[in-house]
Length: 202
Length: 202
DNA sequence: AGGTGACTTAGTCGAGCGACTAAACTCTAC
DNA sequence: GTAGAGTTTAGTCGCTCGACTAAGTCACCT
Image (tube, rainbow over all chains, first blue to last red):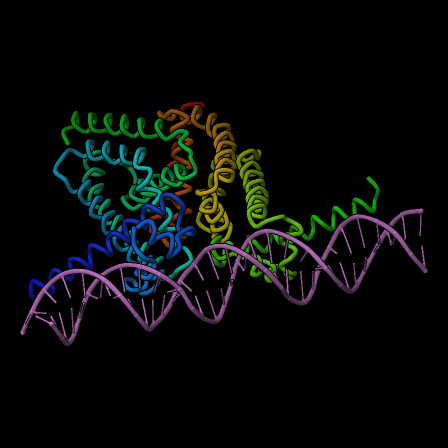
């Protein structure tokens, strides 16, 4: 591809990202139901005709927003759980995100709400969820062995995923009761299990 | 109040319920963002002018739908956890609802999504959530003592609530992986703890 | 029989929506 | 300097929306 053509594609990608970034900000601010072509264009600092020019339709724009966001979500999860640090440190970092990352969580929830009533987007969410689960199975398999946890791996991963999602759902409604206690307890529990595993030579 | 006036109020309540029932069905079928005055009236088998006549505005109708639904939710939770049966049976029933009650859960999630961007509705959701938590503290306090669980009550209740919500959120996207394993494990774990508590005379 | 209030219908209205486009602008290549 | 492709603007269009209402119906009370 010529450098001119590459520059064209780069410029196009940059403009598309401006719209996608704007869409994420609006997801946080007003939710998916409050986004219109005009409001989006205003937030992106461009003309509303460009939404059709670059994305074809609002539905297509939603598809792109979901794809881009979920790719980042999986990359972040992968960066978190596949790193070379001790598992307890990974857990502490995951728990920190869980009780602090409000805007990120709002985007994710609004996208899921958007997807509930759109089969194509639901499939994407389900697929991403499957990738996340595979990541956690890889991360928790060895931990379950080492700490001698008496719970099937599928149940353990489902528990970790679902309580994480429950905390995110709570926070979207301004609910934080019990979250810190839960986080502190998981960290302390993990610490004790690690200590016990060390003593028994695992 | 005269019997004529009572009949009027009863008729009014009946008509309001027709609209509120219709709204819940549409929450399941198309989600909150897909509900309009005309679609709602059609689903209720009435004229769309009645939405304004009975509720004043769509926003007021949403308030009523949320109030009615959350009152039923708390009543059902109360009926479940405050009954006189053994705790393990309560738990089994709660878990059964969790993996079967699809439409009920869809209504609840759509209402929460509706509430995320409306302060008045968010407050109602947060309040309902507080009532649910208080119910679970009452139910789990004695269980925690009896089974000698090494977890603070607030953390335990938060864990139970958040994983329940996480399962509901998953199911809205068609995700059920790990749910049965998790349910089975919780029931088996509870059975073993109950047995152990019995042996040590608690 | 008539008055009154509750209820319902069949609209109307202004606003905003998504989709789309003609025209203009910009940049690059020749 | 011009042609062409990409980009952007400033709209337009038909449609649907929520809010609202005039007019009609019904039931009850006097």
